[in-house]
Length: 140
Image (tube, rainbow, N blue to C red):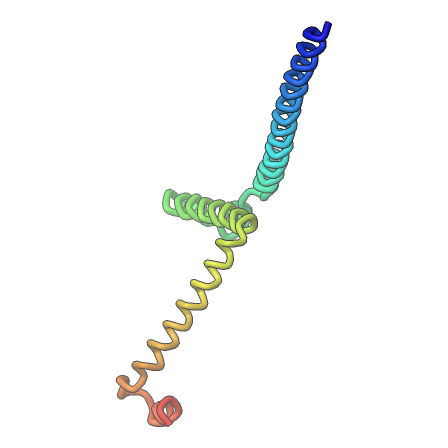
């Protein structure tokens, strides 16, 4: 009887360990399922946002309606304007969902403006056709 009790205790300990392992595995799978559900909901909401963007209103404007009726070139210009509008709307939607890219673009725009300002102020003294008052204002 003593041996049977020891065997039963060992068997119960193994079963307990297996149960703990299975519970840990089940918990990990549940967490993964919740993460995938969250990602799916996020992707679905982004897709719905993209699909709610109205189609280009360029074709409906009077200018482009009259232009599209003026032959092959008018139709091409209208089609090109519609495509450009469609791509800019998609890019805007992408920027809406990507904060890092928005910051990088803002930094780029600031840097390019500062560079142009520097170039203009650096080379204004090389422009002899400008009035003397401009030179005096830039180089006091």
